[in-house]
Image 1 (cartoon, rainbow over the protein chains, first blue to last red):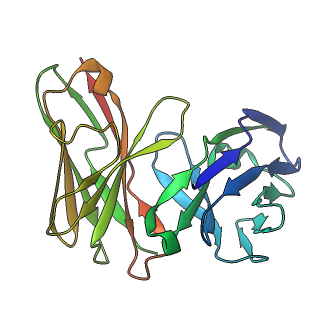
Image 2 (cartoon, helix red, strand yellow):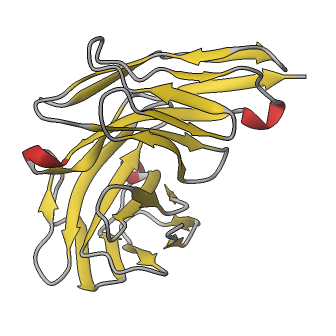
Length: 114
Length: 115
């Protein structure tokens, strides 16, 4: 079946530190992979996506590369800011199997301190 | 990008009453919308898939008579929590896919508190 496993956290970093949040997946078909971010009190916002192997999604300084060989989609940012404090969700969608919904990881709470 | 609006953002209701949550796609037509529930410090759990003009598809373990879903138009889906109880208190989020079908856009979420 389809599932996503991500680093649980919480993660606390100082401003300008390097961020990695690990995400691995299992899928029966050919998934598209996503990172969503949830700021306090808000719904989810798409952060970045990748639709096929070796694609790199990037946005707001965040990057993730779709690695089919390791079934991973780790999120990275070179220098985090206080405003990046949020919960980050890795997700997959596998339309070829007819599963049009998103499968989410458990989310990782990031807190960036000044 | 596409916008999905969810209303209300917060609601407090008495035990035994019903609450309706609306989810609208503002600038695109959504034949399919999804309703999720998020428990504290947990991930999102898909509750049901809402299909315009037909019955919703519920995930295993979700009571369809308790969580009524209506998708009467291409831009509006509603979730009604009937006879709410304190254990229904949660954060409910809807999403809709854009017309390309790849990206899901989420509403702002509704924090339901049943007292």
